[in-house]
Image 1 (cartoon, helix red, strand yellow):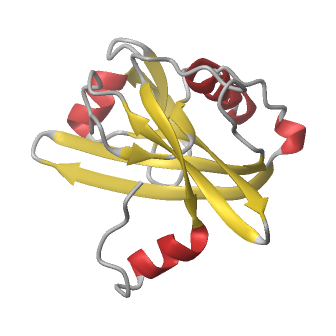
Image 2: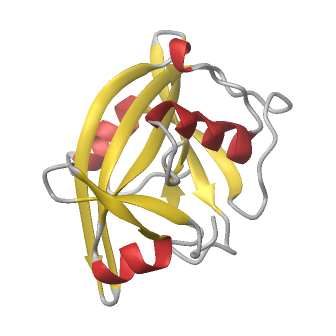
Length: 165
């Protein structure tokens, strides 16, 4: 997404107040909407959560692990329009009807000159991602990894210090 594209701006109570460029929103810390779609699969009674590795070319957080598919909602888009991110990043057509909505979560990330205040619309979809069933948008995503939920829980509870993927 271009820093010049327009996104809808809200106040901290999630009330619509106008539009601004993505660049301006992150410079001033304006509240805006994002879309997150987590995908998972169950294999031999083990839950696997899919993560994307962001492209090295990304301006923000290059090479880092991220949500399976995610992005900013543009001005005028509905929450369900966010499913375009799955198509753009992974080449998959996912119907909103096949997803469970987990809710809207306020998220704040404040770094040196980057202020990200967003209302994150989170969805989850059961979908097996096998090689050849998806196509990565190379400027956005460099890889997709299936990580066992059990190992993630160990990592987050400090019983595991690292996770090789």
